Image 1 (cartoon, rainbow over the protein chains, first blue to last red):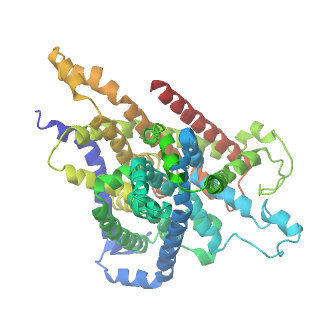
Image 2: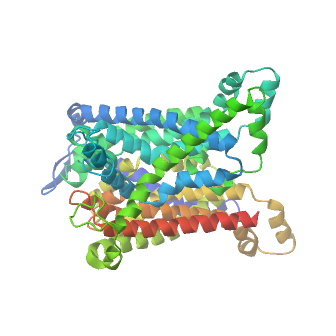
Image 3: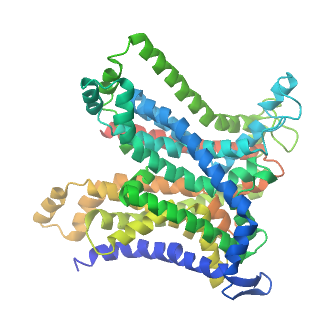
Length: 283
Length: 283
């Protein structure tokens, strides 16, 4: 009985994960090679060439998503690192207040925050309207429906996921180690590049994992802030599944996206250790 | 989250960093960095301010984008969009139901992972990691593939299934962290004094892991009520608050949405503040 206890504890949750996470992946693979339409039904024909077709057809959107995801991730690191650094080393007794402020956006629905940006950035909205009437900007100037708006929205929505893991990593750096470096005549810059930065890299890695993946697969920002020229692969998958009901195409696209990401994620997790990434992800 | 904030070791950090540089220079650098931190915080909070403000906007047209003057009229006209209220109600029901299921299953998982060494532990960790790291889009798409293939009508129940799926790992990890930190000798003492396994669990173990369980439950609730992507894939004809907003972006978001968003935000902040204060009192 005693030896069975962990298995009994794990059974309900494990079954849930198996039935609704692992099994659906198999079904998605199966749907991707079917042929047919939503009225007459779909039949399994092992139509593997579909993968070549969708890759060729939506190559632009795949590359664009990767490009947007990468750009937004790099911007996020640049914005988040100094902030996390300041909170960790200079935040003093107000650390938790700063962290709460960083987390505050999460109390408003993701979609609603993005819609708020649409209000703010509208052609005659609060930011552009007054500047246009003051003659500071040309009348046809716009931010919405541009690459800038979509990447800006991505960075905005996922920045806290970059700040937190970097903060956690920096917070763990023992000040005595920095002191020791300086006692051994390391310059301030050297103490940073040789001690603080390497020790904080796991936090940056965790942050990249937590932002790059969802940013690349995102369709909310491109849908609300972007235009037809900013369509990401997520928008295509969403439209094919939910609007066009072209399930095989949609399944092939999401399977390709998942495969590409899983390879990256597991290479990442391998380098870091699964439990470390898990714990960083849980914060 | 409050567990990661360690305020105790701060004062020592800022001293050695500035020891070798002239005082004024350090102060200027710090001040610039502090200004930068507040700039980012302002940027993070700007859309929330706009959301709250435009719930009081005396707008005439359908697009609530430019400021027309202050009014309280929308607070009395919340029932103007019955489907919106219905959607908010659905969001709350789904969040409550999925939180109850997730917390139960996640606590059992966390207990098993934190306390026992057993065969299959690595696999369980891996699957949980996959549940956190996979993009929501892929999880939603594969769940929809499953439901289509086996002929399950998507709706309220499938949304609950999906929400339990993506929050389960977070709860399990939160509880596991708490279980690992437990002092086993207290349970052993209870056993030595003749308590059965069952009594020991409910009288000793459960009260000790309760903070972890509650933190997990709060996280599950927050994740569920805000979720958009997986919900859109698994909801069928059922509307939730974020889905209703997404549907309304094209035709214009009415001020009632801002008000409901503000109310949800206020409740969330209140819970977070109470949580922080009681956590501080406990230590």
